[in-house]
Image (tube, rainbow, N blue to C red):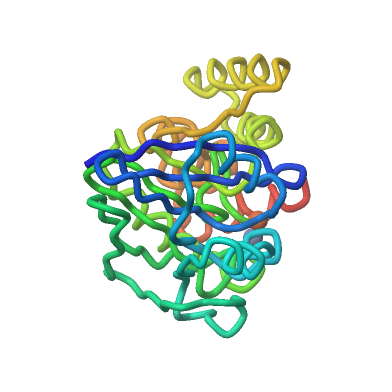
Length: 255
Ligand code: ZN
Ligand code: FE
């Protein structure tokens, strides 16, 4: 029960992702950012998607829905909480629902924050999670529709997944995220080392994703609201998790 992944850039910094169940060959597309880039990936791999797993309603994640549905006759799965904003949606899912891609099973995790209905998909047996614009490598999504405590709860949920879980995200934002992370956590040696690797990858035009939850727990400031060093750097030793998280998010917004 494992998934093979083809990850490719769409638009300027969105990721398109094809996830193929190795046992049956059934393939899901995670979000539908750009028709042309997706068709190229389908041709390159020979993996024809039978479904799209949508994470949230933003245009850069659903734009190719109808075109791909018409071409492949695929099923579009997406969050019940924002179904009316997702064109072509066939199946609405909620927290705890299970989706099968061949023999691979995903659990839906509601992760509101960036949008009010955003969901993530966790394939436990394959040890992969698709977190789109909720959890980024070294970052988290901007809070367009929710308050900081709502996003914090979503990140806390994701933080309970096994540390070895591979995390695939919606955008290649990692290099800018690393610069910001260093501004609030400059003495974290794991972060400094990672930032160097990220710069090297980007210089070669290579993606910085996937990451792992374990790597994020060690280096991503948006998962480190509890860290005494970050709290001291912010002058917030005794503040609540919510306040520390909100302060980090606010600083990133104006960085
Ligand atoms: Zn978005
Ligand atoms: Fe996005």
